[in-house]
Structures are given as structure tokens and as C-alpha cells.
Length: 353
Image: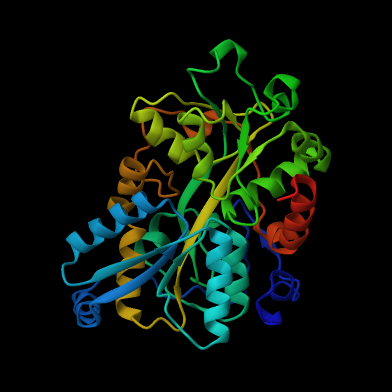
């Protein structure tokens, strides 16, 4: 990737970062909030399509895309789903080659949005609903991006293989010898969710935790969506990390999985979205982005995708704990942006993957 697109290079200006979303502060006024207007809808229909790069699980992404297409007939969404780190690399490669395929991007690594903003790769567009309702910690003050989703990274276990009273209560419990050869875990070099969770856990528990975990004969997978599936299928008894929303969806199908919100605290991951500055379909991109941040679409994220939302007007699911009831670890996108390459290198060395 070009030097100007590296995480450290993008942060070299020493911008202050604050809040749970670690947004980049700015002295400029936020752009004027934009409504979904008949003119925008017509312009989007003339373009007729958009490409959405996202790291959310493919079945969830496809349901979201179909809901948008039903709301705005004549505008098709092409879903390009991959791990957040792969999306980051792909967009960097495409921009180096002056290929501008992506119209709207969603990443489970908030640090990516910081880097893209620094590289002038994002278009300012502030949906009215974001400006009116979202906490300021969840949208960029220059209107470049906002939290499209929130997810957690819990521990989980297979209820057919592990009794509730014997289940791990947190991350440190996974270091017990009885879990050797029974753990599945995702990779921070592929998943933005796991990259962010790894940064939080290494900060709060120390790298000594991962050094010990690496000796537990862990099954290594790529995506944060994979560990819940492996646990439910009985391939491993417990997961050391993975997306809460997949655990919730699998559990709702009556499959044998149960989440555990760790006593040490559960990593919280924001998944921002943005419109690309060189979007080939800028009007369709803005329409999709604005719609995706609306209360109706965010409620769909929760009801269909089991995601969590920063929108205060949506209702969370009744089949899991509220965020206010869970001890959470603090997200720091700036630290992830600065430490990502070191985290990947150190993790690869420890787990030999």
C-alpha cells in the first residue's frame, strides 16, 4: 500500500482523538445536514446502482441490500463482502491503480476511516438523521463517516459440550488447561473486529495473556463471523473471540451456543460507514448511506442482523442484555491506527499463523 495510505502516516499530523468512537476533531464547522429529497432519489435512479464494500456477515449484508432495493426500486446494490483488513487493502490497491469501484464503504475497524479521511478518500455527507439523533461521539465532526453498526466481542460456548456452571467467565479463564485444544479464535490480520478487540485486550490484559493463549492449541480461523459457527457446530467447545451478532442469530435458531460477557470487560467495536470521494455513483451512494443511518434501517440492522446501534430511537432485542448492563472495554481507534502493524506482527509470531 502506498505510504500516504498507511495508518501511521495518516495520523502523523498529530490530530487529537476523543470519545468512544475516537473521531478526528476539527476546527471547521460540520457540513449542512442533508435530507433524502426527491431530487436525490431521481438522481440515484438515473445511476441505477452502487457498490457497497462491507465486512458485515454476507447473509446480513444481502438482507440489508434487498431492503434498500425494496425501498428504492431501480437502484441496485452490489454487495462486496470481505474481512475489514482485506477491504482496506483492496481499496488501497484500487486507488493506487486509479480504479474507483467502491461507492459506500463499511468497516469493522474504525481506524480505517481515520486513514481514508486523512488521505482525502472520503466525501463529506452528513445525513440529517445522524446530525439530529446520533451522539456526537458516533459521527465525524466534518461529516465524513458515522457509526453504521456496533457489535461486541464476547466469549461463547457450546451448550451441548459445556455445562453452564463449568463455562469460562471471561478471557483469563480460557488459559485453564481444561480448554487446551477446545478453543477457536479469529485473526486480527483479516478481521477489523478482531484487530480492535486484540488492541483492547492487549492494552488491558497485556500481551502476556496472548502469549499464554497461544499455547492452548487454538483453532485459528479468519473472520470474526467464523468462531460462533465453529462453536455451534461442535468443532470447538468455546470461542475466545467472535461477533456477538452471529452468536445471537445462531442462538435464535435454537442451536447450542451461549454468549458470555467477560468479567474483565467485553470489547466494543464500532463499524463506521462513509461515501467514497471518487464514488462512480455518488447520488446512489448518498441515498444508500443516508437510508442506512435512518431509524428504520437501523432497526432492521437490529431485528434482522442482530447488530447494535448508536441511534437512540431504535429498540434493542429482548433476547440479550442491554449495553448498559454489560461491562465494556473502551474502544480507541487512534491507537488501533497507530499499532495495527505491530499487533499483526506480534500476533502472527505468537500464534504462528
